[in-house]
Length: 144
Image (cartoon, rainbow, N blue to C red; front, top):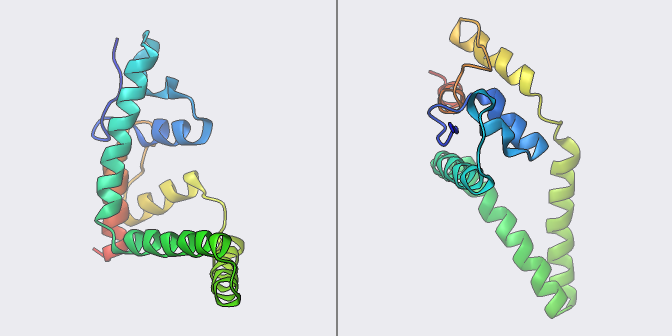
């Protein structure tokens, strides 16, 4: 039984298949047999590695803090429905709804093409690892 258990060897294609379908079968190498508990453990390890990358991104951390503030305002408004809490929560809710409206669905294939253009060579999503994908995104973001 062989399972992808790290972003260092997991092809980005497989990573996005798992995130889109929820099926951990994409963690299995060469259609071999695997136990569900082993797949779950491997996916948790991969998610931990992705979180480590995300935490290093200031934009991600800011986004999480803003979301936390939004949730706290929502709870505060439910527990103590004062006029001020209601106004603060509605402002926060409007901000998040506007951001949702403005965001476009993620285009996986488009992201691969952008990385390929930036890197100057063809990127094969079935061999390009998840670690390489996120490293390329970081390079692009930093303009290097």
